[in-house]
Image (cartoon, rainbow, N blue to C red; front, side):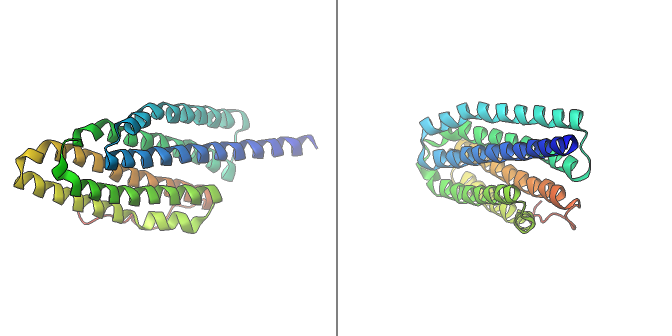
Length: 229
């Protein structure tokens, strides 16, 4: 009975660790959504809240890392239990980076305020942002439910984000060449779009880590890439 109690307690700890990662994922998703909205609406107050809110994601990641390392040290998990613990640790690191990308976007948001001619490109950025946010939500939902099909869907469509970035990159170059006055704002928007592209990469990384946790195997084949990646 004592052994059964210990096993049950360990399972509960693993479930709690996953729940905390899912909670962190929800906050990272919210931060990214708010960052995109702040750019689209030129909402500096919202941008400031995203920058300030990044501290909470950092704190959550540190707490998850501490608990995961404690589980490894004290419980010495093996096989599936070890995969669950390590996946939680790695996914939390990716989510912390997503928060950094959202913060980075917001730190540049005010550079577009006076660039009315950039409205069309801002809309292109918003469309790319919605795609990336959708990918992040999908992979986090699949992780929370341990749904392999959802993870594979995100992984197999990684190139769509790359294609959006390439398209926006070409648009920005066209604007800068045709009107040098847009060079400053275009450069900032390019860095912001690159942050979105990196979030897409993190979503795909999460899909790979969660897939290995659930199945014990790597996803077969090369990760899909855009034409220029």
